[in-house]
Image (cartoon, rainbow, N blue to C red; front, side):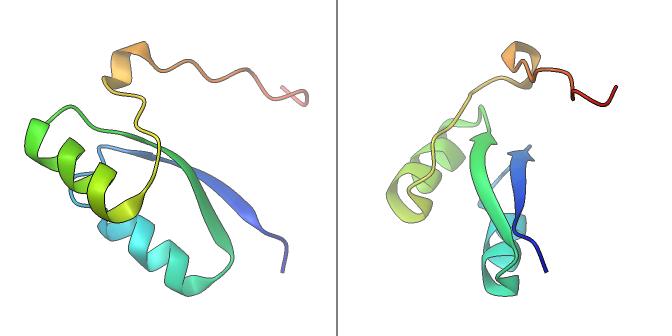
Length: 65
């Protein structure tokens, strides 16, 4: 199975990221969280980059669209 890449939106404390990591086929590349407690938790425990507010996240269009 090919490796999938995930942008974890509304991350909270990273439940989806942890499940994806245990699955072994999904790689979380970035999170989007604004709650200060959750941001600190992500930085300390998940070691992922946080893009901050979802309103400021820009993802380029897929070449197939």
